[in-house]
Length: 447
Figure 1: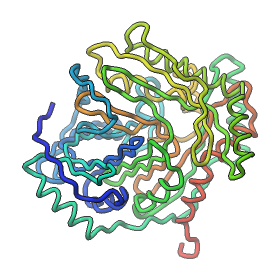
Figure 2 (figure 1 turned 135 degrees about the vertical axis):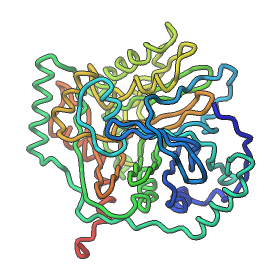
Figure 3 (figure 1 turned 120 degrees about the vertical axis):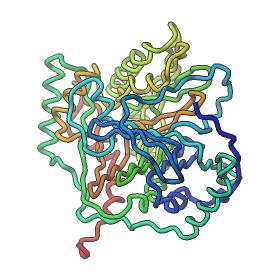
Figure 4 (figure 1 turned 180 degrees about the vertical axis):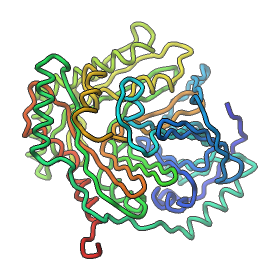
């Protein structure tokens, strides 16, 4: 474990937006931001980081500010709980931030095609900015704090980011008939006994130039999602507007997961909106889907949990977000001593809410039917503190950009009780607001 004498200094007031600071850091090789459910943090200039791409893992070690030496690697760092740690304020306090793609999580259990872009980034950060109502506080090794502060403030005052633009509109890769075909194939697999539920999703793609970051603030305003974030490494960008927690790693080895399964649209009319919420709350179909995933997650977590500690304190709770109502349940457990939290995360990925049940067969069917690798979508973005606590989301409502390719995905769980028209509409209930906003960056007259 690294040891630093960390100093703190407030360098921005609380009204400075995260995307403005991120724009100032555009020249760095990598940067990460997590809204982290009310405890925002921006991390930069990792002491070391790992990147996995095209099945090759590399370890980058900092030589100087924004200067790294690259080494081949064959393993990830170990992360351990500090048994003396009892503070659980859900804040990043120095440690690892990164993402793991759906492709990589699934590839540990099945053979599948993967996007050529980075499929994992994990950086260890001792330099970060944490937000509170008092402002953005720079946390940094004491001997470097004046230099880092000067670099950040200078960059902030001279910030520039290449404007984002779509060369083509972002459109569905499937037409309605192709979606129907995939839906019917899922139904046949269910009838044959291969699976109980499949999370069938479709991709929306476009060609783009410029930095996705210049669009970030508008997406975060649109969605107001608790687990939103941004990560850039070289020419790969990941913009999260996710409402879904995957796993919270809390003090005293407690873990919490909150799977989402069940969706209804929001309405401006208060009566219609309440009716939509009530319909979801009373939906036997959605309850059946939700409990399947709860059972799957209970099974995933029980491997690492102390006997008898896996609980379900909330079942079928309705949570309302800007565009949709979701049915959300909660599973908790206490990890066995000496368990590596990173192993728990990697073993549990991809999350059951975005695969189906049973999970391995569901992932095989997803790979067969969806016709394109998901990449980061349905993976996870989050952090681990040095004491083993942390928080990781499910990367839904997220946009990924690699070089000039942009993709956005949406879908839902299919069971024997599913209706094709309703499932197709649910996909657009989830993504249409983001898709419409994304397409405002397409200007056909200039193409």
